[in-house]
Amino acid sequence: MKYVIGPAVTFLFSLLLWSNNVSAFCGFYVGKADTKLFNKASEVVMARHDNKTVITMTNDFKGDVKEFAMVVPVPTVLEKDQIHIGDAAVLKHLADYSAPRLVEYFDENPCRRYELMEDRMGSLRNMAPASVLAKQERDRALGVTVEAHYTVGEYDILILSAKESHGLETWLTENGYKIPPGASAILHSYLKQNMKFFVAKVNLIEQSKLGFMHLRPLQIAFQSPKFMLPIRLGTVNADGAQELFIYALTKQGRVETTNYRTVRLPEAQEIPLYVRDKFGDFYRDLFAQQVKRESERGVFLEYAWDMNWCDPCAANPLSAEELRNLGVFWQDGSSFKQRGNIMPQAQNVFLTRLHVRYDAAHFPEDLMFQETADRNNFQARYILRHAWTGTDDCPAATAYRQQLRERYEREAQTLANLTGWHISEIRKSMNVASLPGGEDKSWYQRLWTN
Image (cartoon, rainbow, N blue to C red; front, top):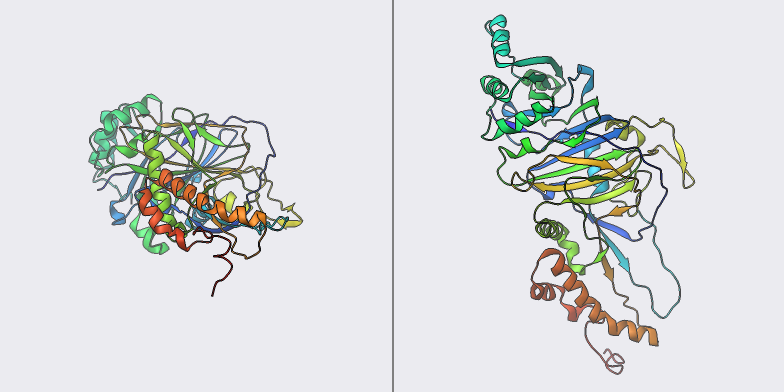
């Protein structure tokens, strides 16, 4: 049996003041960098308010579902109705909405004084023992208690408590879980915190009845003062670094880590036009470069925004119903007027998207979080700026054309700095001579074009 560790979270959010700060980003949205760009990627959605938490967990498990198992530390014994099956489509909508994005701007005619703005915007096999009494006696000897056993959708769920890590490790091994080297110490640390263990396997019979070909997200709801993400179990059997996307839905403001540095990714950078056709490569290399610059210990902010609106939109904001599906329980369910329209969308929901690449060497501690009062908007947004190509002639147009070559060089240098790509290859790909203003022409060379 393959032992797959999935992330889950327990947390404490501080209730802070409401702020209505907004700022507008203008331009045409033309592309996004989604989670599929990254291998070994897991996604966790956390809806949190007043110590009440709903977690939606998914991962990139590939293979025979008979070998799937998830073990997650949780702060308390969960009742069956605290466990739910989520909707993968809603999580994808949230990921699309908050993805890093590419936008286009078009320069205006420098000879005219006007403003041109476009407003767009993640079975238990039937463990019936030959002798139930013998099984219970063995569990007691190991110090493991099965606190609860449920079937939810296509999953069989156990909630375990244990007295010590060796007994828990032995129990898991005897019940078909492969425990990777190094797990014992981490299990012990969670037991010292009096945490329980949420264990999920696929019930093949139920999955066949339901007809789902892919594993759906698991959701758990609980109340706890702890605000943490126990990621260390995800490193003990990992083959290399793991990608984790964390979507925090809160009432007050942006979420950040407290025991690792939360870093805003570079944003609003102007890059060469040819990147439009290779935005995925650009963003992968940009993220790798930022991870390297933070000595592989940073947690990166990709998006922070009030869920009422977006600008520019990589996807429409989630509806109130979709957010409730993800655990947002503090909305009153009513529609409200937004910019002249009745929109059935979120009230008092702020989204923070964090992206972390982690391994045991660089992330020896679980992630600890706090909610801040910051409601300022942020998005990892990168800009393609198209040059004006008109033929009007005036002093402003002359100056504009003269500065274009300098602008193209700045864009090349920016791209090299963000990605680590070689500057000479960037200049070659830009083909500056073919761009508007790319060649230095005198006034008489521009006079006759035939």
